[in-house]
Amino acid sequence: MKNTKSRVFSGIQPTSEMHFGNYFGAVKNWIELQEKYECIYSVVDYHAMTMPYIPTELQSNTMNMVIDLMACGVDPEKSILFIQSLVPEHVELCWILSCYCSYGELQRMTQFKDKSESDKMLEKGNIVSSGLFTYPILQAADILLYRAESVPVGKDQEQHLELSRNIANRFNSRHEIYFTEPKALFTEVPKLLSLADPSKKMSKSLGDQHVVRLFEPEASIRKKVKSAVTDVGPKTDTLSPGVANLFELLKACGKMAEHGELMNDYNAGTLKYSALKEYVANGLVELSKQFIDRKAELTGSSRDIEAQVHDMSEKARVIAKETIREVRDLVGLPKRRD
Ligand code: AMP
Ligand code: TRP
Image 1 (cartoon, rainbow, N blue to C red):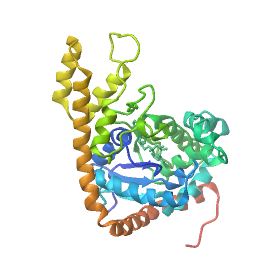
Image 2: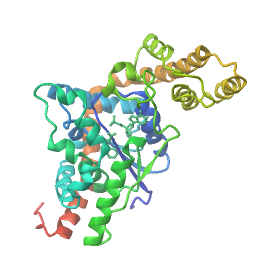
Image 3: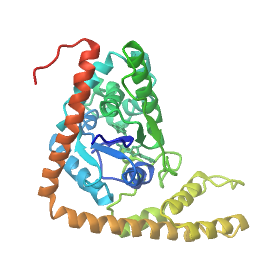
Image 4: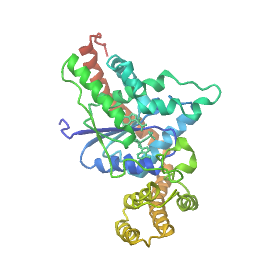
């Protein structure tokens, strides 16, 4: 029977261990959406090649990210979880779609500007690759290959999603309405800020002190939360970004009663930031413990997981091949024999 559930697609790069920005900003949604939608999730290792990296680490980080996602609750019984580079059709569609995306559109991508000007690029031997420039076309190909309707991501991906829609729209108007225009799905915390510098988003590329990792030891989580920046400069009537971020975290951890209580204290002018931090640390440690336990169970069967992820990649490939067959026909490329 044909699956009539609406389709969801999302991807995550295996560039670093998962952090709470990834989790609260996107992955939490991935887990919840599995109940109602046909979900396809990918560890996007081709994307991870766009910044300087070490090949042997890429391989182990990719499998590690698969395990981390399962530990968070991505369930192979409900969803497809696959490795992008095991489905080479992503690259073929990327090439085709690059002919439907203008140079000017890519130039306007803020993530490209940020990454190409990052400190990493100043290190000797590193180049701003054309892969980094065309990265958003590969992302559009990821989504359009499965004709997904919804894409759960953090706020930083909004611009890439808009470009994916423009590419789909341009393709459809030159040929026929073939691709679905995908929409972004955000969580309640679409942009978690760094605890060490709340003027920036939580991101590993700023350094380890800027992220709280899901599988981080308890003492280290507590230390990072304790030293979170709260108010800088003179006191104002509105919550400072650092304090607002801590309140958001408390809510994201599901600590609604504590959130309400501390917000009352804030309004009454009696809030102690040390108390707020203690509650946030408790919430994060509680969640982290669940993830660590689940990961320990999974790591014992990592060989089975590897086989499972290969099977799921084959499943994804069946869908991808069908799209490529139809797209090749639409754009005037010959039929393949297989
Ligand atoms: P990446 O690690 O860049 O592949 O990101 C994986 C997912 O996490 C994407 O959907 C991002 O938008 C999301 N994400 C990353 N950092 C944050 C953050 N600080 N706040 C909210 N979402 C984030
Ligand atoms: N660019 C995304 C990020 O950095 C990762 C990604 C690649 C993605 N392909 C995707 C996200 C397709 C959603 C859909 O977070």
